[in-house]
Image 1 (cartoon, rainbow, N blue to C red):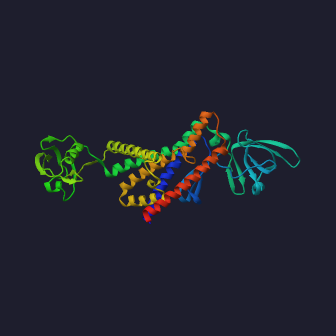
Image 2 (spheres, rainbow, N blue to C red):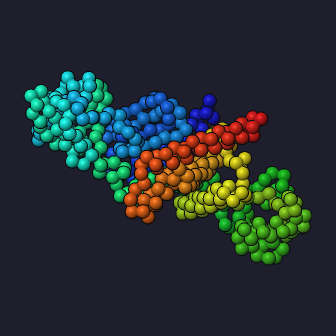
Image 3 (spheres, rainbow, N blue to C red):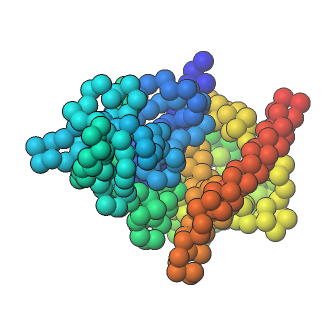
Length: 412
């Protein structure tokens, strides 16, 4: 049970910050965000804050930010339809009431003209045949029974924004995952500490050559066979090159200089003493090491995806939901620090995967923005939607194949 909760928390954190990136940049661009959802499927919990409804859904395998103009609106008002309205003190329409909500209207009539995207006007014809034109407030609500939907003028829709604003709204999701990965690696560096560059013994493994020779925690190794040791890497290099060879270590301990004989064991043809360095937790060291680990894992992730394209790796090397769940549980069992590193690695993979130029992913949407910039006009929304739908179907097939491989690998 604890493992399952850990897995759900890890995935939820990654998805939450990914979608939060989209939400923040969308709101900065003035886009109306109707819903911020964590998960898919039936709604478990929700509340409305400002213009946006925040919800948690049953299946924690994704999330979304539903922006105005991206999806068809729930309530559509047609010409010839009966419509009720409510007005504010300035005579602007604040509520457009349809169907069961008509009874709560101040005025009613038949719709003869309506523009809720640009002109923001509605013309109603009363029973006497008289037509009246009303200005509609930019944040007016369409009411259908108990349901209310805020109207979305074109300048509040995703499609109504500049290419730059749309680019950053899309890119902010993967970017947030990269930032999150840095945070996790910095946290892991603090938990474990950062290996010191100084040739000072941080600990001795019992029963190893170092233990037998009398090396102790805190000893500074200053020379090997009379040759000065510059730093920890230099120490490791000299020891590794001398398996099964008697060495004379010159050390400093509590102000005294001692010489200890030691013979490194052979481990795969490399010398090994059985010591590890001191671990530092200063802010500068931890942050620097966290960024270094982030860069190392990010490069490796890009190289891994490149190998899939060039044929250097196969689909059998990919892990799907089952594999990720299994490995997350394994990492959690190894300790909090290991889980932090694993979560950072997952966050990088989520970011890199999402910016791949594949339809239905953030990267695919960025490609369409690039094409729009080159053409000077947007691609037909219906054609773009069809391409994304095909891409989504292919991704689902890929997920099924990878999940099948996961089941065979871990349970077959």
